[in-house]
Length: 273
Image (tube, rainbow, N blue to C red; front, side, top):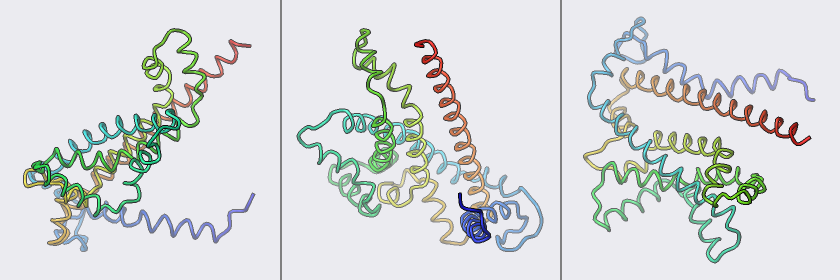
């Protein structure tokens, strides 16, 4: 094994500082008393209270949460089905085209995706709002779910499904009772990834939104163009806290599920022996 040298330690320190030091500074200055975000005037939580009284930010946050929940749920359903078709269906006419269309948003610039969706919505006469944002976010986040779930399905032992079919289950029951619980961590990871992508999206939402729906990234972007306010720091700190709690919770749940699955497999081996 390679020794942990000073060069490695310095590289890791500089890398983590480059990534997380700006976030730490942002969190610290969210508790700044001064209205000037670059001048420290003492500790205060008044900007969090101001943020909670700002109805425009609250409305934008509510729109963003609704869009993220609906789009990630729909993307998880469609992405899981697409992954099952790609991994399980074998060779069929149009498989290459189908796979290419699923994975195209991964490499497509967001500007092109947003513009094409905008032209589509205008062409079919669909009013832009929450519904169009949900459709747009589902379109580009579904491919990420498909990649995560297909990688898990590729390593799945189909003998378990075949055993369930031999015991009288229908194909849907075998998938629901056997396959889905085993690939559940991948499905949950795909949902969380789609949820995060939806929360973070600015470009595609800018093309597909309308006057009746303003997401939080669009609101933040329009606000910082006039100067960064302490409320933006407070809002960003809350978003960092929510994402951190979500990631930690998902990691704990996945670890517990993996531990329980390992125990069940060991118990099954003991029974067969």
